[in-house]
Length: 266
Image 1 (cartoon, helix red, strand yellow):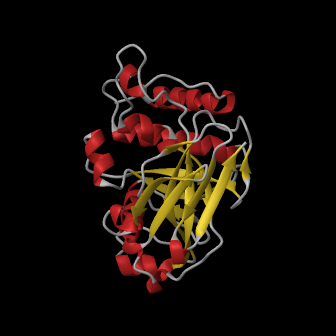
Image 2 (spheres, rainbow, N blue to C red):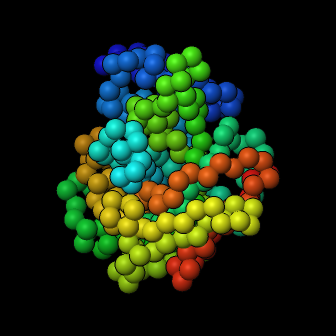
């Protein structure tokens, strides 16, 4: 368990890493007894600092929603992070060179809300509160090293959660759909990197139903005193593995009748 002072110190360290594009070491190595509550407290301290500096909450992301990723990390629960208003990139646009440290991209289904949800909500509550769903790309980055250079130990969920669930950006596709009209489990994407198919996946990989991601998120957020607000974007989790995006990379995700979304890294 970390002290309040340690939580604030680590939060400041991660904000500095983001600003300078210089990664810091694994928290799980430095603090072997770190807990998931500690990690969310560190994330929350960064949120408080950013809001005080004028940033706004654009929405939320859900990660580690597939069984493959959960098993790889030895966990049985997703994680979540915050989307800020400076994280939204235009569909078909360009991500400036140097904006991120080690950017990667995932294909996801985004929900845009028209009513608040919090607490013990149902699947039906989520659908009723959703304005529309769209194809999306999530841009990942890591302010914490992916592996410890001395031991080779890889990041654990505590590192990822403290690092805002590796969240860095979002690209929304232009197409909008009523979630009640689409079986999101069967919404899939063919993802191309520089014109070559790199990954494919189906929405069913996200907790067997992307809507259930919001059910989980609303319940988790309520335990930390937050809720999902109208107008906010929620990324429900990836159904492909992350794709590395060095400078010059072009990404396009073709969701078929559901739409398409693309971005390029300068």
